[in-house]
Each structure stands twice: as C-alpha cells, then as structure tokens.
Length: 152
Image: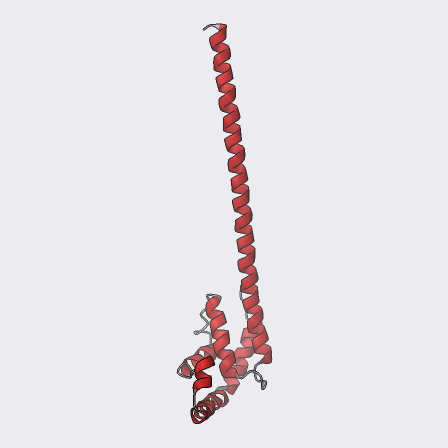
C-alpha cells in the first residue's frame, strides 16, 4: 500500500469518525430534549392530578353548607374520581357517593335546571333533600373516608 493511499484512507476514516461524532452528539441532544419534555409532561400530569385531589378535599370541607349540598358535591366528586381513574364504587364507605350520583342522574343541571318550571324544580329539590336525609350518616362516613383516603 502506498503512502498516498494510506493517508487518503486515514483522512476518509477521520471524516467518517467526525461525522459519526456529530450524528451521535445530535442524537444525544434530541434524546435530552425528549427526556426534558417527558419530565415536564409527567410534572404537569402530577400537578393536574394533585389539583383534582385538592378539589375533592375542598368540596368535602365545604359540603353541607348552604353553598354546597351533598347532591352537587357527589356529582362533582364522582366526576373528579373518574378523571383520576379511580372507581371506588366498591368501597364500603365511599360507595354512597356513587349511589347518590346514580339516584340523581335524571335531574337536570346547569342551563336545563334553570329552564325548568318552578314547580318541577321544587319537586326535584324535595327529592334531593330526601336523598340527602336518607343517606346523611353514610355521606358523613364517605366524607371522612375520602378525606383520609390515600390517592396514590
């Protein structure tokens, strides 16, 4: 092998090594950016999850006041539990939230409630009050169970 061929082969090898190093460096950078995005996404998901848990706790602490009755709280709590991917309908204390939600699903909410005649709203209010009275003790147990529940 001649000296020129050797140096040519050496130069080509050096270029291949440099190109390979550049490709590896870029790929490492892409991987680093991807990992940062994944971590940011996981952090955002954890924050959203915690926000839902905090919302459940706030609802539980304000339920029973004139501002928030058990019917509305049950609907909101069940929806938040669904968003968390939790089904606590088999839990001996918390299942009443699901039962109450199921018993009141037929009652209109929001704009539909506002559009109802007063007599119909009154009828539904009486029905909701009966459900709240019927389940009062169970709802308090559910409240305590949810406040102490580990959402992990």
